Structure formats: structure tokens, C-alpha cells
Image 1 (cartoon, rainbow over the protein chains, first blue to last red):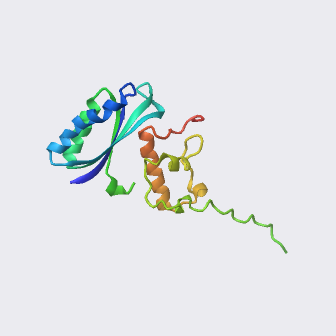
Image 2 (cartoon, one colour):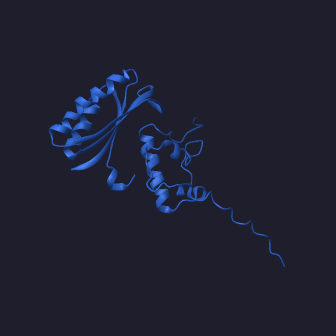
Image 3 (tube, each protein chain N blue to C red):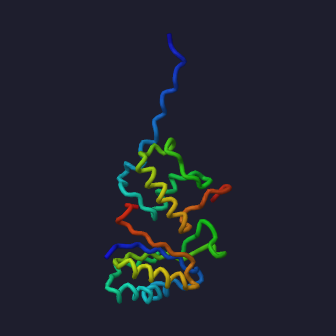
Length: 98
Length: 79
């Protein structure tokens, strides 16, 4: 079991209030595999420093997760298949200290 | 016999990060902004006055932040 940070940039046309519940459905992958979700932090709308898929803004969300590597990989895969997800990034905080 | 007076070594901006930062967080954009030029390039160690380890940490943090569009990539006059 390891600690991961998953950052997601979502399409700005989404309603910010629906973001947390939608992400939650994806997090079921973690829960069913025995991991737990520490924190879901929705930063909200932010200007991107460059355009991603022609979008100048994005809704940022940060997920703190304890899980098996395979579960996180699956979560990342499912997120990136979503059209409303502009970009994702998975980092292990403990390893490289930053 | 005063030799050509050497300019006294300009004191470096003394480890900006003795402000309590021990671990550089790639999500701390306001901190990382101080380590890039207005064109978006990472400031060299000569300018930042960081230790090699710290410089490395800052550099990786900036690169991670760039991937998530938190910081700009180097280019013509970024905003």
C-alpha cells in the first residue's frame, strides 16, 4: 500500500459543484481494491499557463490516495479515457520528497 | 599597492528557502514562481544561491508543475 497524489485537470465547462461527486464514482476503483481515499481537494477553476486541448482554463482537483499500484494505475487509465478530463498526473509523495 | 580592486562578491539572495521550506512542493506555485525568469526559464544556481540538492528539488518541482500547466514552459515573453 502506497500513498499517491493524483492531480486532475477537468474541462472548465463542467459545473464545479458536480466535480466532487463525479470524481467520487471513479474513486470506487480504489475503495473496492482495499485502498482508502484520504482527501479530495477541488481547487476550482484556474487559468492554465498554456492551452490544453484549446482550453485556456481548467478545473483542478487533487486526490490523496492510499492504494496498491495497480489500483492507482487503473484509476489513472479510467480518468484519462474521460473526455472531460484534460490531463492527469500521478505522483508518489514519499519517494522523491517533492 | 592596491591591486585592481576585485568587486566584493555580491552576497547571494541568501537561500530564499531558509524561510522554513525543507521540502519543495510542486504545487506551491507562488514559491516556484520566484525561481523562474519572466521568460519561464529556471533560474541558475548562480542566481538562486541554492545548494545543489535544493536546486535539483526546485528544478524537478518546476518541471512537474509545468506538466500540469501551473507554470509556463520557456518561450517568448510569457505572462
